[in-house]
Image: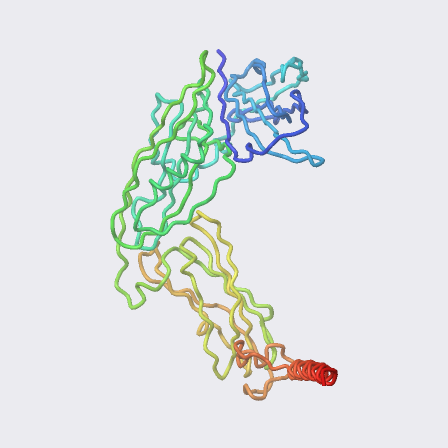
Length: 461
């Protein structure tokens, strides 16, 4: 039993670029995927064509394999100043059983030219487990797929219930079963469809951070014991601003059914609606000011031992799940032990992701000796969604300082941060040399004008 082709066409805006200087046949290369695979993996034959247009005949049948999906991707390139289009056609094969199988030397027709396919031995190993299937991007355990349908559009919501300010992720993916016998292409208006999808999904009472998907990649996953290939077309994270229940509208995606005897047929897929309930935060003086999520802290101190008057770099890194746009750490107040200089803030946050980190860097100027804990200076208050309670993360670092006690007025002058807090960036320095130069120029010009006037008057007199 053989399987018709599955075409997954990844539409890319770069296809609108002009193409010059490439013949109809173009440059063609053929390659094979891994020749030693697990029973749950696929063997692939890949053909790369650099030409304005392409046409490829049927790929060969392989004993011991079912011919499965064919994917097509397009990308623009530039070589020696000439723009062109590169088409990548990948044919997948699903092994029927473990063993060694022979791919006999054969050929394939590409743009009306016969291209040779070398022979190869493909070793299929018994699957040790389901480890070759990656976990779906969200909650595969709650996804309900229709076993009668080999291709479906699924909207996946990461949480059914959240607190105000707690993020939840929404993804929309096109799922194709491994046993699929129908070809599917993404249409040319995919980008427009995804934008319409985004507008329909976004709740009115939520902040949004969305991941821009510029390249749709295939990802193997297993749901309810059945193998699928997932193509994620939309992914975003939302943070509710109030306790209004969230209803995410159903969304649709039109696909092209290919491999039929007639022209491609358009078919619409529907992803079901979803609901998310929102719980209020418990009463607290900082209820409307603290971040919401699940966080942890990692610290870094350049040197745990120093002397008075010598600045020490210190880093307080907040990591975890939450809206990092609300994560802040104020500079501690100066006291008799330390002066603190304003922090440098760095972010490591991916758009559309629930997780990230924010790094706060400080310079600490010690003014008195002793073994001093920094927990009284650096702390982060937030609402812990795992505990459903307010929580505080504090520093666990201790700094050992030696040397004589100093005051702000008697700091060591060789410290590069000395007096930094007293500098007013709004003050504009006065450059008297430039002022004097400008006055001299005005005086000289005035003298020249007066001299010319006198000379003209003497002539007329």
